[in-house]
Length: 91
Length: 210
Image (cartoon, rainbow over all chains, first blue to last red; front, top):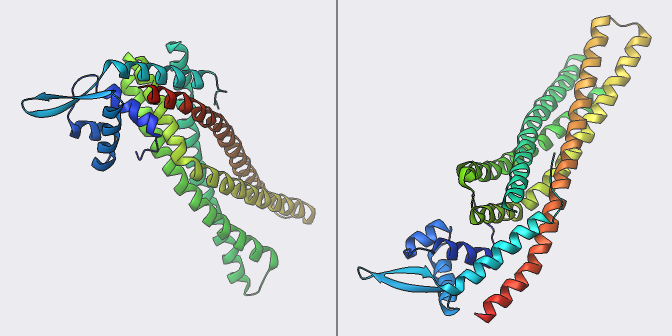
């Protein structure tokens, strides 16, 4: 399915996926991103200190930092709240 | 909280899926009926070898409804496609639905609505037009039934015309019913999208603080 997500939703997806070390390819595949956009988001998250690089057998892997937990928690809580507190669509 | 949210996600997904299925089914029925109305009236014109205004009007109306129904059907398949993806994802995760899975599904539903919003809005207009066309067709059939009764036409002829009127009214009413429910779906998600913009400000602040 083609996605239409906001940058905050994409950050959340990358950070939750990178709770364990992940390669660049697996991140862009899982989060449905092209390499250019994926690179840009990863760089942003690294700059903000939410994502870091670890080396494993000389290959770079990305992992979410402790700081990312705050973002993930805030995002999860807000999205659940806005969904819970909105009128329900039912047939 | 998770259980409450999970149940709401489940109910909304089932409703959306059912609406998409009904929409595709009635889009198909509407298209078939429109072709039959169009062809039947054009054949009557050919047989009569002259321009009969009611047949001409309903021949044109039938082909117009065919075009509208075809557009309706195409939009319906696009909508069903996305709804099926999210439903399948939910089915895979539902046995062990964690907080993050639930948020992931909400994000997917949000992205789905953002992507399909123009199609749904267009389809609501198309569905409304098709509904009105079928109601007009039903009205015409009903007039024919009354005329036939007055002129003492054969009973089976009257019955067939009454059946055609009923079908037209049912398809017309269902088209308007579907438009109404898509409207309800849109208003629920428009509200959520609006709330997301507020949430984004909070998330922005959080990122700036990082």
